[in-house]
Every structure is written in C-alpha cells, then in structure tokens.
Length: 424
Image (cartoon, rainbow, N blue to C red; front, side, top):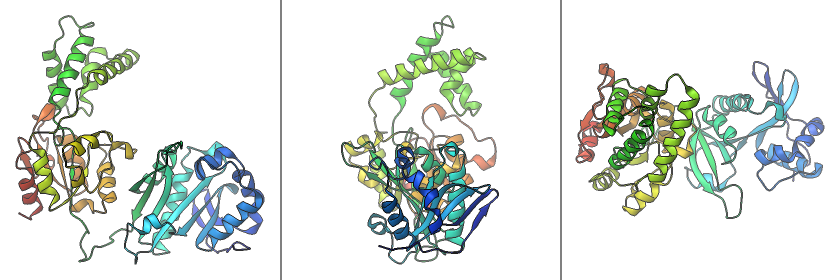
C-alpha cells in the first residue's frame, strides 16, 4: 500500500470548472464526502456506508499509483473528485485485445446541491479529451454504473460513451445489473485499416415482430375510449387517423390520434392516453415473429454481426430465444439499456459502437422512413426498408429519404442486405 499520494502536475479547465491535482492537503475536503452514505451510495455502491480516514487515504493513495487523481473545483470551491486510471478490471481485459491502451474514469460529485446540474458530464468530457489527446488512450471506460444511477449513465452517454457490457449482480442486491460503458478513440482502425466490423441493425416491430394483432388491439381500445367522446367512433376511424399521422410524419402516431380529438386539453389527453396504454397492456397478445424472419436472421448472421435497434424492452429476447435465433445476435442490448431512442441518430450510433462497429459500416433495417431510414442515413449507414404495418404507405419527402432497398416483407431480406453491402 502506498504511503503518500502520487501527485501529478496536470490542471484541466472548462470555464468555471477546474480539475486540479489531488494532494495530501485535500483529506479534510474528501473525508465528509467519503462519510456521507448518500454520496457513497452512488459512487461506491449499496454496501458502503462510510470510509474511515485511514481507509479513504489508502484507497486514494493506491489509485494514484496508476491514475491521474483530481479535485474538481467550481469557481474555486471544491465540489468533487475524479480520476483517469489505467484499466484494472479483468472482465474488461477479457473482451478486448491485450495491446490496447485502456483507461477508466471515476467521478464523485460530493456536493449534493450540484447533482443533476451537468457538472459530472463536463468532468467526464475534460477527462475524456485528456485521455485521448494527451495520454493516447485507445479506449476509455466508465465501469460498474449501477442501474439505479441513471444520471451517471447519461453523463457518460452525453460524451459519446456506449454500453460495452451489462454485468448481472447477485441475488438479494438492490442493484440488478450494472453497465460498463466505453468510448473508442476516433478513427481506431481494424486489422486492414478499415472499420473492424460490418453490422446489421434490425428494427423490432415490422422486421422481427409481426405487430398486426397488437395494432388491432390498439385500434379496439382507442375506439372504445374515443367512442365515449365522439359518437360512432370506430376502428375504421382509428386507422384513418393513423394514416393521417403517417402522412404527417408524426413521431408518435398513437398520440396523434388522441390529440386530434382532445386538443388543446393536455390534462384530459394525458389521462385518457394513460388509460389507453394501461388497457392495451392488459389485452396485449403474445409476441409473434414475422413469418420467415428466423431463416433470414440465420442467413444474415453468417455474414454480419447483428444487433437489435427497436423500441422494445428485454422481454423481446425471450421470443428470440424460443424461436432459436437469440444466439444469432452479436448484441442483445435493448431499449432499456439506452437513455435515448429513435429518431435520435445517437441511439443507432450507440448500438453500433457497442458492437465495436463504425456506424458508416452498418446497415439499418426498419419499417419507417422517419425513425429508421432518416437517422441511419444521417450516420452514413445504408438502409433497407420493410414496407409493412401502419407505416407501409409512408413516402419519402426528398431524395435523401429514399432507402437503399425496399421489400414488401421480410422474405429475401438477407439477399437484399448482401446486395446493399456489396457482398452478394
């Protein structure tokens, strides 16, 4: 155990935020934070209530042997601590080549009044730039971010980090799982100087799942509820309104239908839409795969790494497992693993990065122009559109929104993807 902090001479600045070297004079600053159970709950985990002065000093001194340790100051007032450390976790080394320079960032905002104000995000940004530009790191990680700490996860994601792996915790713990997030150095090449992986991102609804029965249930629920407001309102009226929403490129077609009749009463809209959502979940039929998609997925997995890019939670994995295609996917991350979603292109970018793939080397397969084709093209991805479901008649408004290939169903998807990829 080291008997003193290893002190460096680096100071990092971002406006009023300054990261200065941690020294032996900082123990009075650090001790209150390290004896606050609420602070430690988010920085150390659910099992730590307080560190003794001796434990705290030993921890920081040991870390400083392999890290740049900093005190974060805001307008000259200490508000937290952080460090950039050489990677020390076997679970990370086991997933990545041994010759890479891997680092990790740890951050504690000790002043609770500043939580949720964006300072953690800015600290991570400073350390990330320092790690890549000065230290020459290949990859930088945020490790062990607990599922009950979404603020920390968002802070990393806002700096371009994506989930590298999900780590399940043992039974009886508050933390069900934690996340290792990573950001790779820009332009990190593969073995031949090109992006390491060509991947295919598959939307869930309309590509993997047949949503026809689900849409019928939604229609019946909507007609039931709106029928109390609009005499004679029918399932046919619902689908006509959905067509309007699709033509208008409404991002949330279901909300469009309710808002059409409830505007401008937001309170009434919120209440009725919540009721519709609850009824739908009560009556929701089981998930069912698109006819023929299992064979197409197996064929695709022989040539490409596959990932899931739909707005479904992890229960979709049970359906993939039951159909025998779960193992065809290189990434099993689902919507709940990300703080953002479509049509934000960063959602697709994070899925690609989590698969160690350059977004420009990916192909997005989806059923919508607005949520699949447009954000994918913004990232330089090729696109394949499946014309099915509620959005089958959606039309591109400009040539930039035209997909690289279109199919009227999923049969032939593997061949279409190969042609788009230029590997047929």
